[in-house]
Length: 297
Image (cartoon, rainbow, N blue to C red; front, side, top):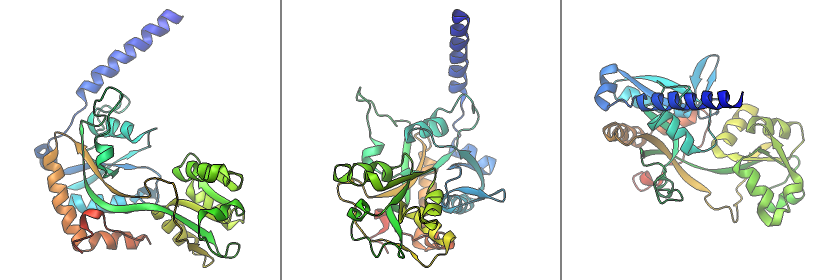
């Protein structure tokens, strides 16, 4: 059976390779002729992109829809589950495709770090990992945030309080790794892991934890959903964390710079007119301008 199984895997690999070679990257002219802009959004990632009552929602969806409308196009959403790494998602949805979804390349991908270091990241051979991708168009500044229950925790002057007060985080997240390692692991005994940020908030509501750490957008969204006056946002810093603030943008195939330029032009109009800020406010989110625009407004 083993040789037959090996041949089967080799055949599947060859078929996958043939499919990969045929994965279409639509030119800007093809996109405008079709009247449709295909945008990749992460599924189940409230408040950024998710579905509610069968309808797409989230600030990334709203921004993508506004951009498509600005180009005179209709938005088509390609929903995606996140891969192990962002590089995998860029490969599967922007430049090569996945053998299980040979015709599902997106024209543009939302929620990509607008970061020069990440854009020019190399592998062990010195080759650019994302050479087939152009990352552009920062539309939001993101950061980490703690929310806490004022009934059980008077304030959060620093993360050191979580030596004594339990805090909830999403499993396998940056806050999980950070809080379990800072201060030589002194906070790990009070660290509670949950499947999602929403579940961590439920834990705080049930007095299992006194605080939750996640992306600021997730915290803002969960605070709005909870509508609990005892829940508040902390203003503490995060020592030894590395990158605590970063800009979020978009990505297209490197051959599609014309699309990137068109989207950038429309995005700048939306940001400077305050329309992106309004979209975020509709979801109860604090909006912070990307660095590129902070000297403009």
